[in-house]
Every structure is written in C-alpha cells, then in structure tokens.
Length: 309
Image 1 (cartoon, rainbow, N blue to C red):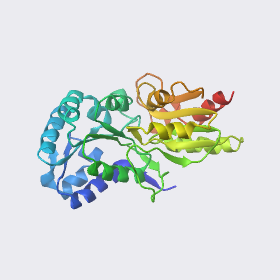
Image 2: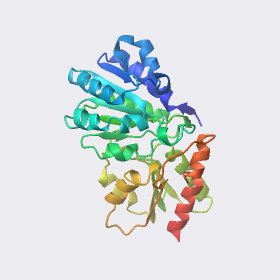
Image 3: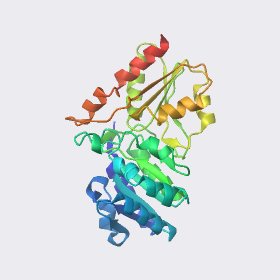
C-alpha cells in the first residue's frame, strides 16, 4: 500500500490552493513545522500569520480576516485547536457562520510521545456539539487533499482532524469527495462497520480476517462526522445482522453516539470500538497505544464475534 503523511499532504495542498486563490491565509500557534503550514509560510510569507502560543487570539484574528473576505485556516494540535479556543470558536466563528477553517493536527493518540495533554480524544465531540460547524476526518492522504479543497469551496466553519503519522491510502483517488456523504470502502453482507480516520484501515484488516472465517464485513468510511446523511446510514444498515462503530476517539459524543442516535429504535445489535472514557498517555510508539486502548483489527474482530453470538 502507498503510505502518506496526512500533515505533509495538508501542507502541500494548502500551498497549491493558495496559488489558485489569493484569499487563502494561514494562521499558526508556534507549531508550523508540526502542522506543516511552514510550507505555506515559505510560499506566501505575507499571507501567513504566526500568532505564538495563543489559540484563543488566533481564532479571533482569523474571524476578523474571514469577515474581511479571506478564507482563514487556523492551525494547531487538535487538542489545542478544538479545546483551548472553544469560546472564540463558538462566539466569533460558529454563531455568525464565519468562513474559518480549523485544522486539528496530530489528532487522536497519534502524538504518542507527549501523553494526555497533547492527545485529542474528545475533539470530535466538542466540534460536533457546535451549531453551524462541519466536522471532517480523512481516512488517508488522498482524502485529506480532497477535504482541504472541499473546505475552501465551502462557505462556513469547518473542522478537520489530521493524523500525525504516515498511514496507508485506502480510498479511491478517482472517487469524488462530498461533504456529508459516507462511502463504502468494502462491500459485505453480514456486519456493517462504520469508521473514520486511520480506523478505516483497521476495519479493512478486520474484514480480511473475518472473510477467512466466512463472515462478510461491509466497511463504511464516515469521513464527515457532521453533518451525517441519516438516510444513507440507515440504508447501509438495512440488511445487516449487526453494526460496529470504530473510532480513535472517546466513546462519548463521537461516531458511536452519532450512529446510535440515527439507529434509535432499531433492533439491529450494535457494538462500539472506541476509547472508554479515559485520557491518553505516553508510549514508545503509536501502535502500542492503539493496542492498549483496544483500537486494533483484533478488537474489531472481537466485536464482530460478540454480535454474532
């Protein structure tokens, strides 16, 4: 499989789009070498604003730039870009549906070395709770590029969570990305598995394991976590024996909550593979944390077996 770093893809895509649209500006909170907006700074030094370690002020400035006609991209680690300036995002961006794009870099547990303070496991819940906010989570580098393009074209607040590490491409380069539309990555008839981000790859690995046992998994990439097409979700579950949600996020307020609400009243059994209401911690590598928090293909297989029983 082709491996890509979503942060690098994001930085390069922003530069390419910046060449086409001079309204695009980027703001960073002393993390441009991590968020990869250093590429945008190098290409357009007069359109890049280094705001220091002050996400609240950065969002307020971005709102002002957007109100003056700019397409403002705000950049920081996901844990800071979603949590630290919450009030500014709510009041200055979301209430007025201001054209600000908030990029949450190093999302989930991917910043494995820095521990709980730098790992964003509740950012989707925070952003989904805000009216007028669109929440996106790319499954790979291919989708990251398409999402950034879609965010530029969309008029209004957008939050995109970007993984820190290299991950394999799992989506189709030729398939058009549409905000709000879930995409079937692998067809199957027994269990429908909904996932987003790197967990789409883990779901595909689980599907390969279960195929050898005679169980067919349909893997669905829910790369838009808000808004979610409820009719499409119900249709994807209509003939399934069970539903599984998989996310590198707390079980509260994320994909599991969204799918459970959509399927309320349904008799189809459902299991959730997610972080169980706890903070992250430091580890030697990313995969070690995924194993510890039960976010592997083996954990998805366990959920499948539980449903089938």
